[in-house]
Length: 95
Image (cartoon, rainbow, N blue to C red; front, side):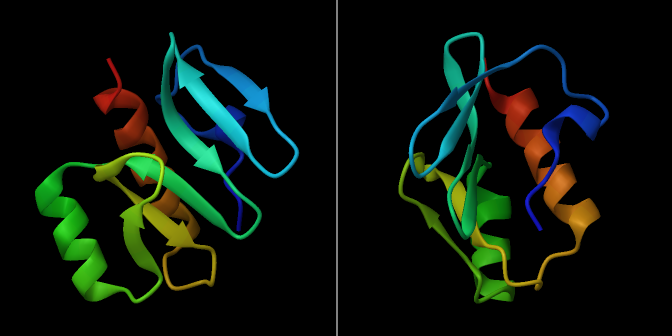
């Protein structure tokens, strides 16, 4: 399920750039969330990124953020509240 960023607590001001196949969410001028057709990408620290990629086959290294993030296939392996926590973490990690 695609997260509704406006309803996630702990998220302050942000801007959205909508493209034909994705939406990019920015805190100031730095991206913290990319919503693609079937995936989302968020910033994440290396330790948590490694743990999530080992635990879930639907989690992989982010194409946008590289080693500094993860890409999650929205296949139902992660619960909605877990995805919201990752979006909140990504927002807070973004300078």
